[in-house]
Length: 424
Picture 1 (cartoon, rainbow, N blue to C red):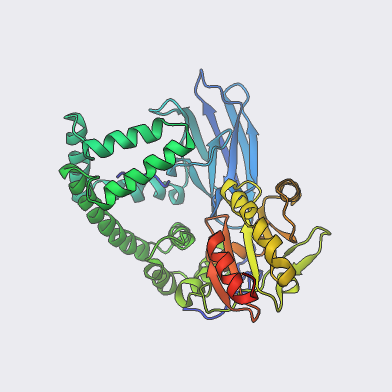
Picture 2 (cartoon, one colour):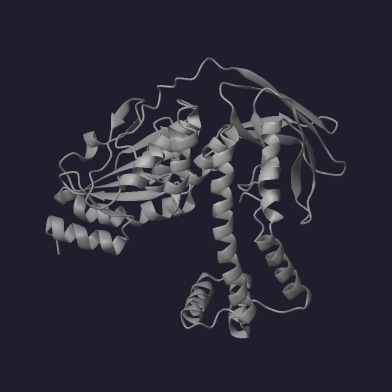
């Protein structure tokens, strides 16, 4: 496990009430593309909770060179990605737009894919490399790397032969039925303790040790930092809704950062997400959060206008999210069955720049309910619902506005609606 790559408030903060002094900086971003690479442009994009929902700036490569003047209104993190962006990134691509020049070299990595390396930057940007490299040199990580190298160099396996065989067949298969069957076999083997070899069990134990050590390292490092770098790293932790240690980082923010960065976009995001973790605002038994988004006529509408007094499903999705769309299409029969009894659905699409792709997707997929659009996270809807780094979430709401279930399956939805609305 290499760590070097990045693969209590009771009310929401007022999102537009920034108290920062006037700030405007121009950052010259330039670089070169190594000979023999088929790269005609690079992409500059602001790093955020969900990178598929961020506007991209395409910068042409001419004679192996590129340059762009980036104007920013706050000190924030951006990425320079070899075009086209494929949805993964490295800490080597990241830089702060802080008014100091930054340069990159685009080259091939060990896998033969295009990669970018920051070659000159400000002290603030240089912290990215130092942050991870410092931990990678700690004894716990050095021991782990030596162990992994020894197992792999001796041709040993971290999994037992039967599991290895099934896993290899799964990843080679292109037949969905076969893949589903093999996946179930792997789950059964794991449940029966037949997945890991003795080396795999040791690897798992060492990774747990590393996770604990890295957590402690981060807490200590961020407490001592108190710059925009530390603020950004805390925001990244808060973006990850699957983590379970948010309050440790929020406490660091409260103690060392909040007063110094009032109104900074990262501070706003941290404070917007804090109630979700502190008070579990989006959970069964709590009231749904009434947010507004863009309707098909270009008007901002509150979701309460569509679901007030009804048993309803709030469907957060995106035109570019395949699993979201499959889930939404799967509930069309449920809508047809229960809508005459008072059941309602309102969809909100998480989109970039405009809602045209969402409108086309909703029409193509046959959604029969109203669909609103959240453009460029302007209303922080996904943050307010505690899932900033994922496009999809469904929230089932009772007629009094109480949340009944999060991400119910079709079967769960049918069962609850039958109980609530009486159809058998």
